[in-house]
Length: 255
Ligand SMILES: NC(=O)c1ccc[n+]([C@@H]2O[C@H](COP(=O)([O-])OP(=O)(O)OC[C@H]3O[C@@H](n4cnc5c(N)ncnc54)[C@H](OP(=O)(O)O)[C@@H]3O)[C@@H](O)[C@H]2O)c1
Image (cartoon, rainbow, N blue to C red; front, side):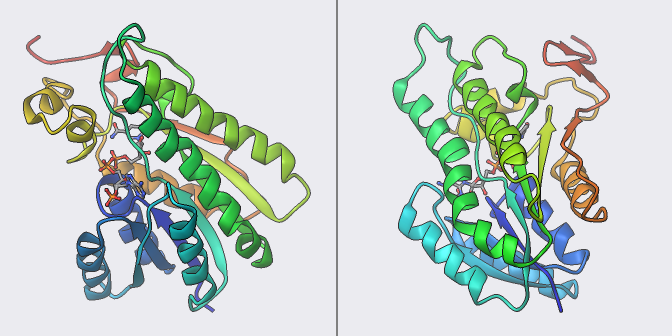
């Protein structure tokens, strides 16, 4: 029977690439996000490539909406073996001194409470499968801070804390927890969301960087971890572009 994978934040970037990749690996994918027009396009693309997927409208900040995702999982054509908590992002690059409370609130709501809400709602189905996997897409900001990144790092540190705590609490049950920590990934929307739609600021993040990671690189890491035999638990996978030796050490050509 086909296994079912749920990917949140599947309407763009890493989530969309992960949905495509998991479908190619043979999963039936429930692609969840708020923008259903994008999800419908993604599902068509997956089907054209020979895979199967279902678009599910879901706002991870809403109990009701996440309950709808859990209901869609119950109705899916197979056991739910994989949840990829990917929905998230950054807002602002302001110092702690002047960071907007609203930006911090958004980052905590989507990245942290979104992961908590979706994981709680899907745990019963994942456990019932007998071999469940929970992936949490945190970030290198989940263990390193940088100037202007206080709110994002606080949220990603919290996601990292959820992953570690959950792994301890679920020990002995058929559920593994995998944390993926990407460094710099050039996706179409991450920078736009961070800088309120300012394309120049978003592009400057990657200026001169020879080859930032792309969404497919992270999808590859997620797929590799999730398709290991179930007794193999990759606790945490840190992945950065070659040009980024550390958060503060980025090789930029011509700069
Ligand atoms: N890009 C990077 O450099 C980088 C590095 C490390 C970690 N990450 C993490 O990787 C994940 C994906 O990032 P990305 O670069 O692919 O960014 P992205 O393209 O902006 O994707 C973010 C996704 O989250 C979804 N989302 C936002 N708010 C949501 C909500 N309330 N409910 C449901 N879905 C919501 C968006 O879909 P809708 O707007 O349609 O809902 C979108 O599909 C994030 O958790 C990010 O923090 C990114």
